[in-house]
Image 1: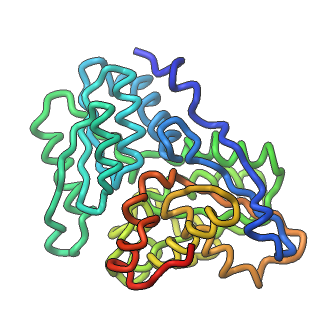
Image 2 (image 1 turned 180 degrees about the horizontal axis):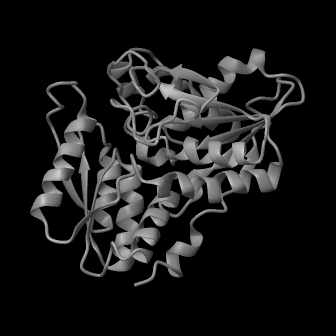
Length: 321
């Protein structure tokens, strides 16, 4: 069994475009890595491919395997697509924050949904409850295999060998990298690439208010894919030089600004990254080159980020379009 050819060939090599209109009044240059142009619609295509391909190479995944993962949505879509290509059964453990659009796409690829509707009693978070459910499925289903995005070195390897390498090949040594965090696979892989080359790049982790990844105070979060209720296994204390926390409102405003100025319809995490750059703009020196990873497509957030009624009800303000 090989994970080659076909739709697999379309993963990676996403465009890197200058956001010249959004930051036209700034003395530095910002380039957005359009990860939502991967075939599965997000940056998660890369680790999905690496985790499955390496598991196949090691003999851990065979034609009889059942792939199981916990995901807020994007990795589930990526795995569902690749499992469909391989002809493997895929089960994704999700929680109520996963959007209906994500769920519909997963099911379209014949992925199975296992919904955890009650958070972990000790922490009040869904992620520990989802991981516990994964363990239950692993014990119940013959030939089950957990890709484990939270602890797999292949998650980070995907981004050191492809994402950051592509940015470096196009821009050279960047001065700043802004990266949203959740499983910490993207930022960990990018950090390892940057540090291995001795670059002085300032790595800025964009985390959600309410996330505990970097020791923040636990709180509620409206959007999937940014922040986490526990510290992931791929986290390291030196994975970022600076952490910026963004609110749900910041994510919405950043997304709306991307559409308004650049005609880019991106997901909530991308809006958080844009808001983080804006907040730091006074500290970024003239002539600096900034890379921003924009993780996923905005179509998955049409009922939330881009829905004025939802924003008013759930976040409590009227967005400016």
